[in-house]
Image 1: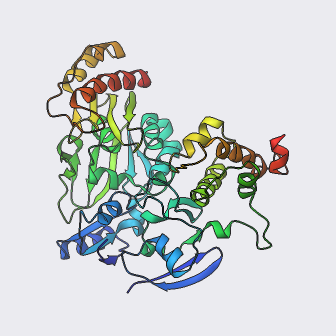
Image 2: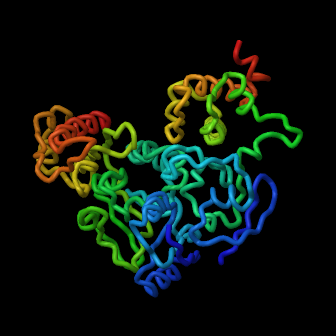
Image 3: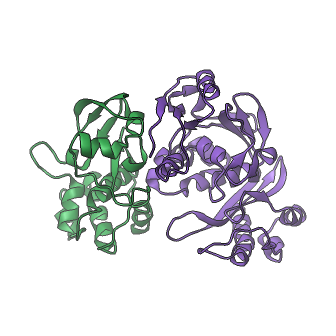
Length: 264
Length: 167
């Protein structure tokens, strides 16, 4: 790992200033994606801006028909939050199944969402629930946020502060994990609620995406059978030593069925 | 160079580090606490697990500077000062839950956090799931799971010794 300067601001405003002052700076919170990337020298930031001391970015609160979760909230906290478990149990379930115990103790919502790893769990929940991203300068709909592999609408000096999840009537998540790395091979987060019926697929392609054919089918008939016959085209899906694009396409349907069944 | 002040196994330390210094490097190379191991160095194997403010973390994927002000417990800090082993350590010995021993410090630290967070008690399946972040290449996990099941009874005050739990 190359060395870097280290800053630990205590407010969003100070963090934004530090990022704006250095085009090669990177924000970090739990570090469980960034530090492995730095070890491989895939990234060479001149400075790290550690957001973990910013109290205003932490915690879960309910506002009307939505849960607002601070970007620094760790996976373990979301998984065990009574507020999350009662309002959006599928979100707590998803958080409980990220990585392993130690990853959940360090990894954060904001880190996962702003990194947008194709095999990450959180982007599926954010897109599948039709959440709204609150940043240091604006609000961005999930549909406009995830732009491509490791790419989001966030600007360099813009910090993801919180995510607003509308509370659905029903939601479910299912994934097939790579047995060694535990990363998602294909997953589906489905929901029915104020944002209509949504089906978000993660792990299968370069970026999380909505499966509109399944959404249409579930809108007229919310049941696992409704998606069972829908085949995901294999074009543009990931293909690697862990699974071909055709295999992942098959998994998409299976995971969608399981997610709907889990949602009830 | 940045300075870090932290408590390790109850002892206060102030150490100069680089921004990039990992917590495990601080522990092993600066404080010479070599019980914490580095296995994969990619946050998968769990040989480097220590407790930071009471929670198990992978010290190979934590910057030392991020632990300023924190309280860290390593495998060296688990036994009592008089040498009496922690029930989890005692159980690993009793149940032969190790062969080469390389994964053992991380395994024990993860298990202590897992049991402490689940006072209702864990089933065999839950123990296995809780160990997903720790790899062992020797034992096939069976005796590790048995040891943790016995230790949890002692840690929760249901049995007096791990040997009694073995009956």
